[in-house]
Image 1: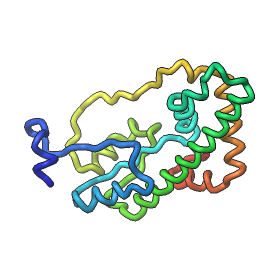
Image 2: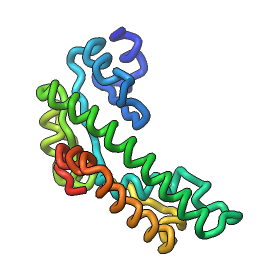
Image 3: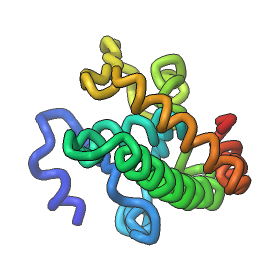
Image 4: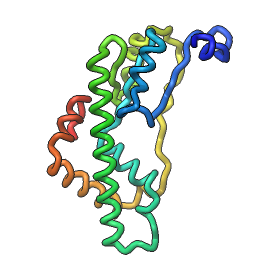
Length: 179
């Protein structure tokens, strides 16, 4: 197994990283990684729930911008998408928070918004040499993010869902966010 994952590393490198947003809930991938590679360190990178939900609905749900929808139909689509994405965020984040709690020496949760400021802590946790590199923070470039009408509907749906499901805020608090 070791040779499978180390044969294409650049000269002088002995570690590799794995970044994936699709694994987590019910996949068992983090647990399998620890079993296959006992020296594995897991960084659970989490983003504020509202930012995550808003971004996902705007960037990955094109039906929201279907020009054939009436305003009422658009509102219904957005509300449904917000509920779906909030449920997914809550379940996945809860699962990964449980994983991190069960493996405190092998995992840590990092809020994306603070990652640049916590780079030294992350590097220390990973037990890797600190190489001076500029940290680049990704910026979202999507004109759909500027649609104020959609933003208002997403915000209202998010707040309504928070009232309907108090357990969402509890999961957010587990990763140090106020929902």
